[in-house]
Image 1 (tube, rainbow over the protein chains, first blue to last red):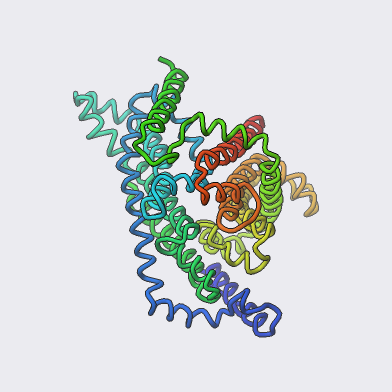
Image 2: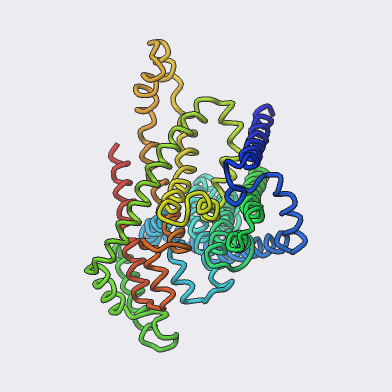
Length: 245
Length: 242
């Protein structure tokens, strides 16, 4: 609790220092918006529909991308576990794709899909599907052998073994993959919106910069940080809450 | 059938399907260019001296940005890891900014240092800083406390503690951090170049894109991926050897 207070106090001091430095004329308000200008900018942006609607647009894309990634990624992860040879062949590739800067391929997606939601959602999909495949495979691989043996001793057929035993045991691990996928999708989609001036939150940040509305630009960037952070916090909470104890 | 054969078969099938799609005329011209065209473009890219001038710009931005972000990240991580109160106080803010896409900070960076090379370098540093700082802070917290107590019982000075106890214990995570930082610095710098610049491989890719020279665009991206993935796996080897 004390730490949190100290953090908030630190932030408040930072804001006061920035305000003082800008008012003293040491830094131009065209470079750093004085913190006192931000609430007015926020209200103006709210009235002009630059807050709620973009947040909704961005979140909707992130969810769409993640649902698509789950529909494709979970069966893939399952297959890589079920057929060990496929797992051995493809898992290193997927691992490498996880480390590779795949987002840099976006100009190709622009060529393929045009400058629209198809591109932003596809970028989110690529970012989300990789951790979902990897975590799903890991989750199935980590199912204790004892559980499967118990199922077998009850003479469950193979299909029942997967449906009644392996899958329920793998659900928490799969959820971890989906949580990572959702966050990666969100972050990549916002970045993409910023880069191609299209869509929700990211576009607002870019637009405010090119319009030279400096306080608005800071509001948009702070909003992006807040949305990312809230998402991360809510999903981590949800995961601990869902995990069997 | 062994895993290697499956991989080979997959690769060959992808290339064949690619070529068939390219020649089918189903898509607009060059949306999926023939492999021959991409190969030719890649060849020209490699022998064109202009390529290497852009390459050098990007390499400098990534290298210098990574160096700055890496050093600052280590220092911040050490501070946040050893001083629990400070670490706990800043954690939510660091985590929050670390999660957000770094590219959206580009406008602030450009207002501060202009739209030139400095802004890409700064974005590379910003991108590399967070994974390094978070990784280092976590590893400092997980150092075997016995090591620290041994150091204290020998009455090591602050400097000796850092060089004799902390750094050797942190060596594996120093390598991991460098790898994480490198990956994100590459993305940060190249995205910033694509958004607004007049030099670098990201700029080159954007030029090809806006003039619809798709095979050349592929060639630039292939070069970027070969270098980035190559360096990454090299660092991975280096990390494993310890």
